[in-house]
Length: 91
Image (cartoon, rainbow, N blue to C red):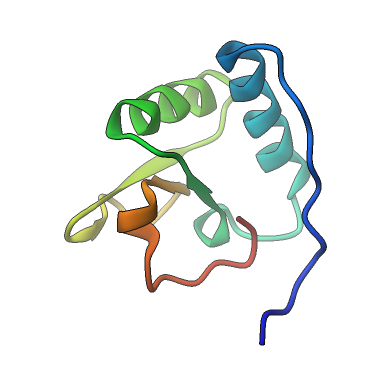
């Protein structure tokens, strides 16, 4: 059984706007450590783009590799394959 907050859907007119929405949401989750936040995207290129945008907004990102997160601190970003089996408070 899944527990947690009900998902909120937001629309973006462009990938750039979507990146801003992602960063805004991570900033809004100030009640949990960044390490308990996961961002899932379809491609590795998008992982890099999200990480760059988070860094621009003052949010420490960490990419999830086949071996796990690159570093212990920061919001975790990865593809569905990389996030499979991992648990987060916010996603």
